[in-house]
Image (cartoon, rainbow, N blue to C red; front, side):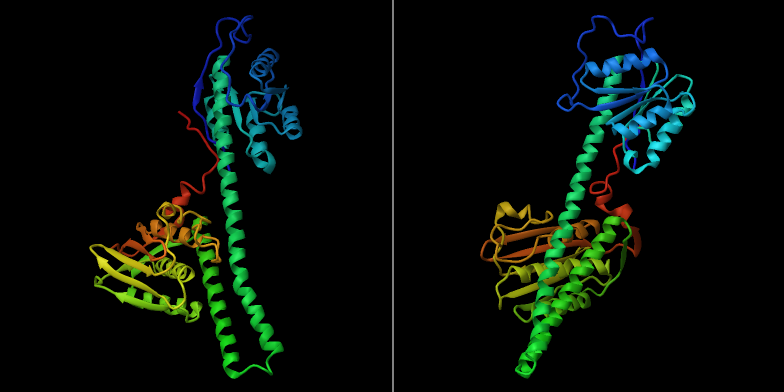
Length: 421
């Protein structure tokens, strides 16, 4: 991964003493990282320039380390693990381009922010450096203030990228933990029922034996449903899941999903599929549409009392297909409605229900990927209605998840890279 390619800083040191700081210079701009002493390695073969750069950075509370050539600079980077590298392009033996190329090829140094120091006549080297993954470059001569501005800009973008990367890793860790937690429940039921079949087989009545087998079948179906959800969502996030719209018999799909959810539910609720007027040609992605309806029904099962009704209404409205899942369960309070589609969010009134709250997040993710919307109306202790609207008149198409997924622009950001102007 690369950090952001930077802006072109065409900067100038003042007057004849361009490599020296004024004897009584006013304090330069305090950078945003003054509370954290950042380590910067300077690789510069010209002694006076190397000394001036080090002095500028030390005055601004950076920890500046220096090297006079590419080889010693690489050794210093390996030992010190700096927060940023300032490197001249023209160096003896190993030049700056070779230094950058080697850093980017090693895993633990590949993301270190890197700024080139270049002369006016090195335009082709500048372009090559940005191609290799430099974050920015400064054209000599330049001023101390603009040097600090460039460093601060690159470090800020790098820190922002680090925070975003940590958030994404935390999300993935939470997702894996929640899925593992949810899979344990059906596994526990399977193990208990297997024990009963093995150790109590002589004392079980035929009806009890049949009930145990039915419950095991329900749990296996639930696990298969959850694993399919996980694999599908993982492919979408990785950009390998194609979005496929094709003519679809929506009534048949809804009936099959209801049948599957009834098996998982174990005859505790009353399901009803309520068809409305459907357009002749309905084009939807069958896999994602099935998983949207299935997750909404399973959510209704989870938060509704036994023997209550769960309805799925479906119809065409203009150029959209509208699916409404209605339950008569515990409902959701108004302040919590906006939160239920966030990952790992669960209402405050559902503490007795198992689950970790990623189902509705997946539903919203799929609905928006298909170009639709999802909304909910709910009254606490009365029930909820989830309404999904999907465009359904589009021609058959195949769109890569890496092109269409919101995660490309949000959940999977690359390392920050400023633009070369």
